[in-house]
Length: 613
Image (cartoon, rainbow, N blue to C red; front, side, top):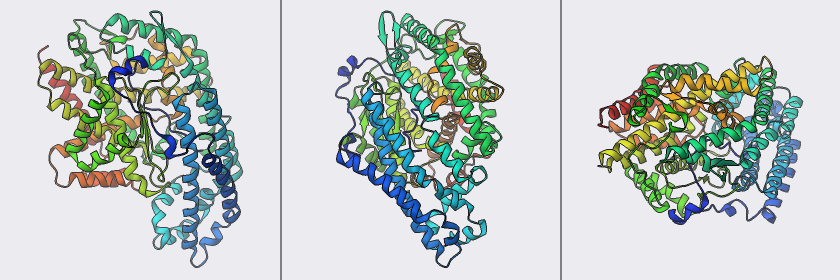
């Protein structure tokens, strides 16, 4: 089913009243998709999608195997796939528009109804397309292998190879249709319940009723009392709603177990690995490498940070606190824009030119607004349109990094779009490449221009914390999900049991220098990854370590790096990660690969240890 991707990047934000100090913050122009919710163009496309999906099924259902066996069968199948791709683009445009409208204000019942109605109609229309990939996969291997070697069908070989990987796990047509249609009242409904519940929560911070994003932002306030109040307010409200979040978590975990069991997946994360086009052993090697590095990374850094604060250990609300006695500067929107574009341009004018379009053509929505979805994301929409970026910009240095990150996603999506709706999407293991690389370019540019020792230390510390949040914390999230889904197979879990699993992985990953006091056990409840995209989280660690390795190749001034980099991004989903990394001399299947990225983080921590406090 076509849905807006889950919001997967946590960002800092605060009250909308502060936005005036940041300059004019842009709001996106969704008219590039449709003029409005009630527009004739939107209604027309929705009706056309329903009619053309029915017509497609009437034209092709039950005929693919016979077509493949006839002379010229490859050319006929190529025409069918082209028609299928056009419908995927149309449905994706409708779904993207409805999703982006909804994220603009999830508290608005009109938008919520519009989104729900769109999802329901798209699901009904696309049910007429389900047969297509199922029938393609029932064509004999040797017949299809011969057809894709030449002619028009050869263009689609990467996509065909991808769907053939799904073949062992597909069900018969009627069951697939049932799973598809029930998704609206199943997983999709529980996802929406989570979103609307989170959006509606208010946290009482010293008498101020705040939504989630401003509350999280206060946990980075320079004053400890403010950070503590925000953390306790977060814990209190989450605890009051924990039964709801536990019900959502239990239901979705059981829903996934049912699907996995019917499809024949053995491990709880195997379906994610398949969709990511990555081998289980590669992920296992990454997880093992990161967990083995906990003492050298997070444990070591947080011990150092506690020392800077004159403490033996930090309370959990101080984990992301700014360093003492180092003022945190705010960046106006135009400053952030220029910093990111200059960093991108120093690497390649082409990179900056693509990123500049997001600003010039209003593809970014930056302000904090009541009801707006929290976090940040870059949504590719469809190749016939262009990506959009959502931020909750509040002017902090981390917000500048988030802008660089999401623009990296956006550039990647623009470059991959020519592959078409079926082959533009990038597996999650490589989807973070351009975003993390863009962050690294911006960070290195800022660091190079910083001469004040205290500011330099603060910047290095902030980058280390971001990398720990991306690598250590996300692997801990993955470990938590694994425990939760394994335990759920034995029966429903209470909120306390889920909280115990959460605390077990948090204590292991953060180490003894972080004091996980009462209240922290509830913090699993607000993290959207666990609801929207089970086991997504390891993609961040994969991407960060991969980019650290890539950046090392770039620093060594390897000839032609930029051309190879753009080729990697432009490939979209047409190549396996091993093919894309080979030109850089990198191989994620080699266990030593992960040590390259982890060593870079370790080196930054060592640099911080060498600086005078």
